[in-house]
Amino acid sequence: MAAISQDGCRTWSRPKIIVDTGGQQVSYPSITQDREGAIVVLWQQDLPERKGREIRVARFDRAWLLE
Image (cartoon, rainbow, N blue to C red; front, side):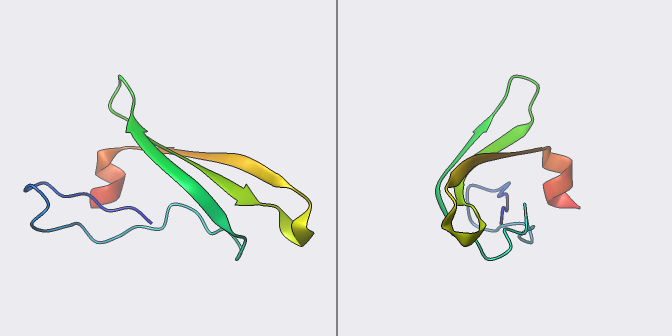
């Protein structure tokens, strides 16, 4: 989930689901903003039936968070 504050963390937007992981464990989340202003989120996610892990990425903009 992701949310954004526009007032120094006093209040937050309604949290939005970035991705439905299907119940798989996720870890090591990281977030940054690229030069064009897009928000980029990375995380590690276990694969079904413990068949390894993948690095996943989601990219969205501020407007999406505020919808």
